[in-house]
Figure (cartoon, rainbow, N blue to C red):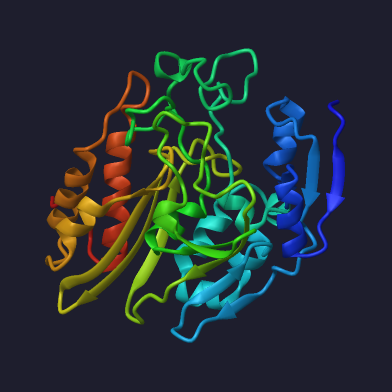
Amino acid sequence: MTPFDYIRAADPVDAVAQLQAGGTLLAGGTNLIDHLKLGIATPTRLIDISRLPLTNIDELPDGGLRIGAMVRNSDLAANPLIRARFPLVAQALLSGASGQLRNMASTGGNLMQRSRCVYFQNLATPCNKRDPGSGCPAREGFGRHNAIFETGGQCMAVHPSDLCVPLAALDAMVIALGRQGERRIPFADFHRPAGDTPQLDTNLAGDELITAIELPPLPATARSSYRKIRDRASFAFALVSVAAALEIRDGRIQDIRLALGGVAHRPHRARLAEQSLRGARATVQALRDAAEVELAQAQTGHDNGFKLPMLRNAIVAVLAGLAGIDESPAP
């Protein structure tokens, strides 16, 4: 075991000060403890933030919500305001991990999850994310879980979080505290594409602490949903997932938010599909056409071509369900 110092932060400002001295944050520990056991993470200082007073879920004046970074996944999924206004968030949380882990995992920690790629988690293999410049064996090896969007970088791993997919669809805002004070980071700018620096998952500075996440309000008439397709019904990461919110008036799509999981180094916002559908009549054919427009950007490898039809069907099924139309083909 690698020895390390253990420090319990007194408050958010103290946590930031401790980070400036170097260290790794410990919140729920559901990801970090795995990496300590595997030898992927070898911190010399652990800064425990699990008791920081960041556990409120507050209603904002515009009808949105501010969620403290230390709100447990189980508490967030059960919150009446989340269930009523953002059911896609509750559904995503309940589809992840197990009840025991949801009782420990934190909202802020979900944003900081690292890859579950088998090569990243195996110290006996090269991995550009774990050891920059060593290579990416996933390209030619076991690639069933590989990315199909933004595949030109040095890493093929996908982002593992369920919660981050609806947060991407909702245009959430990440609130971070650093030595320069509070910073607001649009969710679209929070996670990084793999590019030439796959070891960097986010644009969070090394001395910044996530303190909250803000969800802007959805229109009162909008409906939302999250669907996850995985190898088994419990405790499995997504092969693909879809988070969507849809507002329809007089048979036409007024607004749509669509994000995809299990397909890229970061949650993938399906903006081409959104553009295709905004203002269109809500028909199954329109939904299928929009899915095709988005998936035309995808690049599959030797082991993950199944993701394209799986994702196409999931997109159409989720949107058709929200629109209240029958997606099944005509007899």
